[in-house]
Amino acid sequence: MNVKATGKVNSFLTFRIGNEIYAANVKNVLNILEMTKITKVPKSPSYMLGVINLRGIVLPVIDSRIKLGIEILEVSSNTCIIVLELHLGSEPIMVGAIVDSVKEVMEISDTEILAPPSLGTNFRSDYLLGMAQSADGFIMLLNTEKVFASEEIVDLANIAEAANKKIVAESE
Image 1 (cartoon, helix red, strand yellow):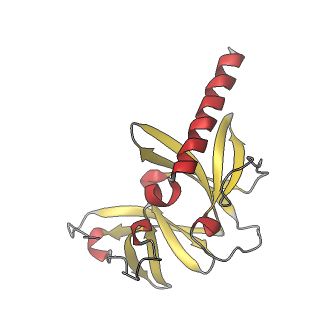
Image 2 (cartoon, helix red, strand yellow):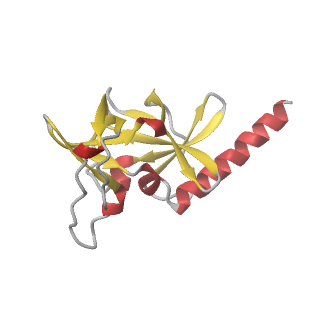
């Protein structure tokens, strides 16, 4: 990845997945929810836990730990769902991503962003926008569109959107 050093500052929501700290640009973060009951969707990928009702909207929920290949920890009082808006094609989609805990919002200048490491073909460097140094170590800046916008997720989001439109039409 070629990181441009323009000095532009962006806000990132930092969160813990397993033992590592990750971050998502706040422009993609819509909400942070407490864990809730998730309805399983048949024949979905292992990382797709199912859907929840978010104020009348069917929201697909992904287990970030499974998606990123990280050891799954027990759900704790800190485990939560980050609601993300992803921009794929012409329509934005919303997905929920389970994380082990939310930390803080940090301002990170693009001059502080380091290129992600190149670790061979098994490592998905396209999942990272880059890395930033903090007092606790490195923060991995996620490319949320690449991580959470696989074909299956887009398909499930489209199904959820169709279900949402049907719910609205039936209530009118």
